[in-house]
Length: 72
Length: 529
Image 1 (spheres, rainbow over the protein chains, first blue to last red):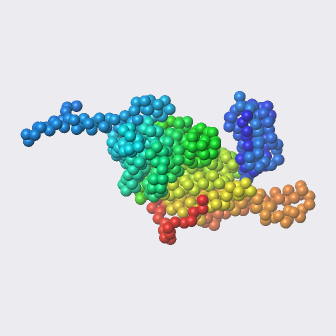
Image 2: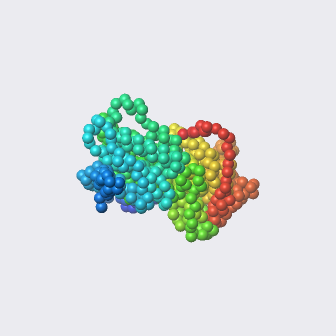
Image 3: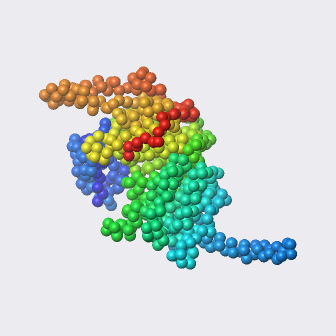
């Protein structure tokens, strides 16, 4: 299971995928908002989005789990 | 081969045995650690040290020093160690001399013996005296413990001091071509450029067996100090390469950007890429919407000669891009923010990466080009605990110190200390221009509004009303963030059409080619690290 974590303290602006969805390497999972910028969070592995731990308008801290990708 | 003989003068001289003996000794040395070890080296996916030298250097240019060396250690008995496991000499890259020291893993795992180290020390001295780059090809287990496990160690270690003395005088490269521990891991630490071969190279202060004994950790060399660790996480290496051949090719390419020593200008190369080429692609690459991310590497590739770029530390601190390239044939070091990663905001690693690269370029007269799109340094308790103040100060220090030509292009954002460390006007920018999208200010409107108008906003009870007021006041602040205001004050040399970026940088480089800056005499500054 591949963990996607926040690399910066941020607000969650948009969640682009849903649980159960297939994603390819480089696909956007969500878009964070921090330091005046939209920060796309991408998956570095292809697979299925097993768990999503964020929703729009919540805040995340650096290192918080955003999603789990089931590599297949 | 005819046997050389002479009978001149009546005496019979027979040169044959002497010359044959020499040839035999040479052949034995060129046989490295013997056929079995050479086979093993190849099985490990590595080239032999002799093959590596052939790929690194111009054909026929190699002059070897100390081919006939051996260990000369009574403790090792009559065992023969070809060249004592360290090949040294001078060869040429693109017709320019370089001093090369290469450890031979087929000879006692490339371990550092007394004679081999004396040879390499001589080469370092040679590199410094003759002012030529020093290239070390590393494939060595580290110190030869069999010979040096006692307290004669008290006299050891000169190699690192010598490297420090060479730093910034001649370019230094450490190519990682095998598993290197301890001593041979500090050599790259003190070199300017460190490429690592994926899968077969590593560097660690303690090798696998020592680590197991000392701290009980069970790890492989690859897990502890492989190319993935050092090019992606620790930042100790510059580049991960696929194999030995690519590694040696990259070393040649790297050195092509640098002069032989710090007393020479960086070498200019003829180019067919027009210096005033319009770069219309930039309209598609960079969104005008200030919050939208894009790939800064595409901007760099688009503006430099022939799109030819050598990315430095591309997989580490990816929120900042450092690269060697040419514009109008002149080598440049590019420092650029990367909005794709962390929004281009600066953190401790990005500041380290930039400072180190700026010091490198400044040491060897390579002009610097700064491409700004930076929302600032990341703020918050996490980065303060990492010491972002001292790391940020390091970048500020390096950029302030640099006396090479410094050209700045403000692409979009350039906020707060981010503007300073990216070589703002006050940092002796020789030519500073902005795109119409440029935003230069101490902080963004959304942050500023909460500070300037906090009381006004706090006084509004209704949340919707307060949000509306905040938006309105932020817009007032935003109206003052405009490149034409800075240009109006003469703080920007020009506002340019993005398509003119390449031409503008070339102009700046031409204007400042003879730049000379005097600083007050001192031993050295007190560096924030």
